[in-house]
Length: 262
Image (cartoon, rainbow, N blue to C red; front, side, top):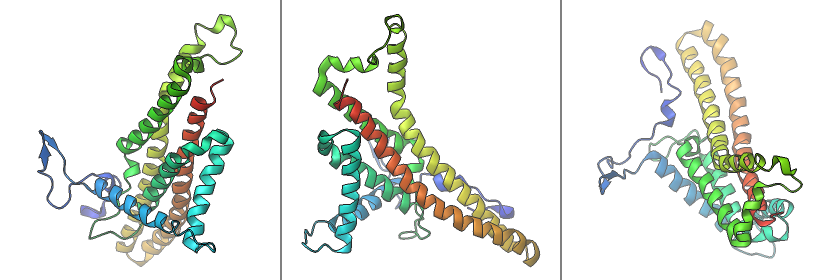
C-alpha cells in the first residue's frame, strides 16, 4: 500500500482484517470475526470443489476438465506408490486434498484482481495456517504409526544397525528430529510464500514511484522493474506449485515412516 511520500509498505498485504463489520462478533469472550484470511480459505475451497466437479462426470471420452483432475489424482497416487508402496493408496484422499488446497491457495493469492472489492489474500503466508496443516499431517502420522505398530513405533528412534555405544545418544537425536518435523514443514511453506510476495510488492513499488517521477527516471527504473516483476510473478506461479508438491511429498515420506516401520 502506498503511503505519504510514495512510501510502499510490503508488509501491509499480510494484515488480517475483519470483513463486513464482523469485528465485534464474539463467542465466550473470543473474537470470531470473519476475516480476509477466512474469506480466501472459503474461496479456495469453493474453487477447488468446482474444479473437482469437472472430474466426476466419468465419461468414456473424458473432457479436458476430467483429464486435468484425473492427471492430478494420478500424480499423487504415483507419488505415494513410490514413497510408501501399495498401501499408499489408502492415503491418496488426504494427501491429494492437502496438495490441491495448498496449490489453489497459493495460486489464488497471486491473482491481480479482487473479489467484491477485497484484494486476494495469500493465507499460506501466515505460519498459523501452514502450522495447523503441518500439525494435522503430523498427527495423522502419529495415529497411523501407533495404530499399526503400537509401542513398537518408538523403534523409529533407533535406526537399524545403530552401534550399542551410541544408543544413549541416537534416540534423543532422532526424537528431536522427529518432533521438529511439523515446525519445519509449516515454516518452509510460510517463508517461501511470504518472501515471494514481499519481493513482488517492493518491485511494484518501484514501478509506481518511477511512474510518478517523470519520464527520465521513470523509464530508467520503471521499465526494468516492471519486466523483473513480470518474471518474478511467473516464478512465483512455479513456486506455488513446487511448495504444494514439497508439502505433499514430505507428508508422504513421513507417512512412509509410520507405515513401513523397519
